[in-house]
Length: 74
Length: 148
Image 1 (tube, rainbow over the protein chains, first blue to last red):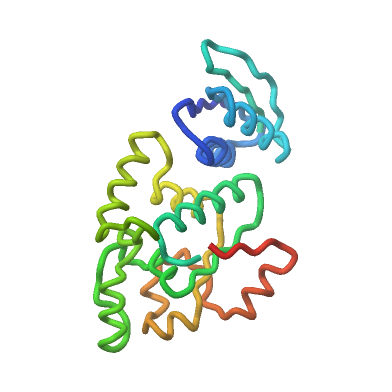
Image 2: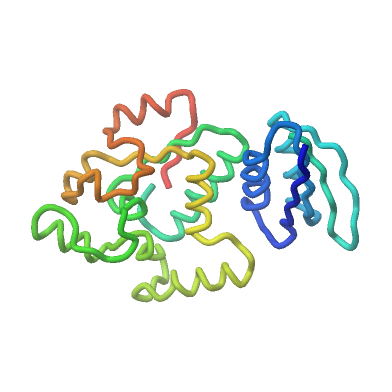
């Protein structure tokens, strides 16, 4: 099981969940992806679209200011 | 899709976004829309016959798509791309690449290729098939069709 990291704090729709999806596709089964993202569209859409596609959202934590960390298992 | 820069942005934003959430996406490129999937991204003298040659040169490829309004002889798409980069918004080429990575299907219109004298090898290899409207309608059955 490998841990991957992705920072999409500077991205906007649709590249927020597009980049997350591309990263998830590249990963092996059971690998973990830690994503840094901002409030609003990314925080709303990235965990929701990941869960809808059968990935497991393990946790969502507030890091600082408007930045959050979402951990997803493939 | 048709061949304007702003419309291409809309097409590839929707296409990559939809493909990222597991929609099957089929894009049908016709007339000026074919410019977006030409192998050469700039201007080139491709196409059969003098008239088609001239049209293809004047139209150019993906880097020459004009803005549907306020194009200013091609200056605006360059300025718009610069603006998008500075605002951290995905550019047309990034959206285009994302659509390919996520497996969006590209189809080219057989009739428009005939008019512009284009051959299969004038288009990028990602174009899955050259087909007519009947086949495209068959492909899009059960889905939603958008004309952009």
